[in-house]
Image (cartoon, rainbow, N blue to C red; front, side, top):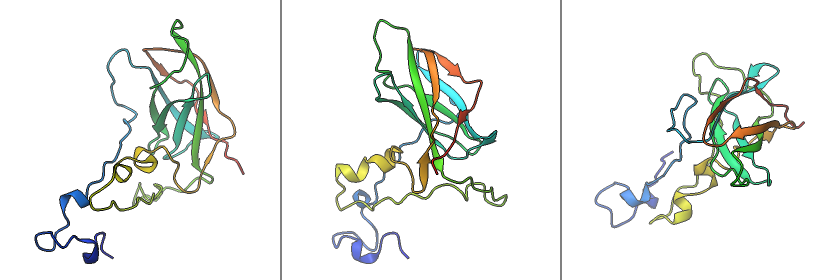
Length: 182
């Protein structure tokens, strides 16, 4: 199977090549768990676990005091994440914010394949862009990592964080629990 079948290549292309405007894909990457941000950034570092076992490739959503999404993060193969609070949605006179962290992951934990540590990474289908690409082809919920992958379910129990300092880093002592809906 060809990613770009010959019929999809524009007749105006020079030779058997896919025009650059037809193979553009902007992937939005989240910072890794060890990334160093500048001072003044509101951050939450932590780990997602189910009964003490790290939950690989989990997605974490921070919900602010008014019920709006305050930030999102993706965990790595050790369940570790770095969440940037982009919209605390709180009273500007306060220097802290209350957040609920909700984890989502596959409903059942996957076994790690020692030959391929990324074998259990969720496969997300991205629709090939049109010629020329539209704005929806280049920026959508899948590419931004906002929509959960197939088979991902939310945890029933959020971790409630009280008084997260605005403009500082908070490292969690306890894991974000993952108790999947059954």
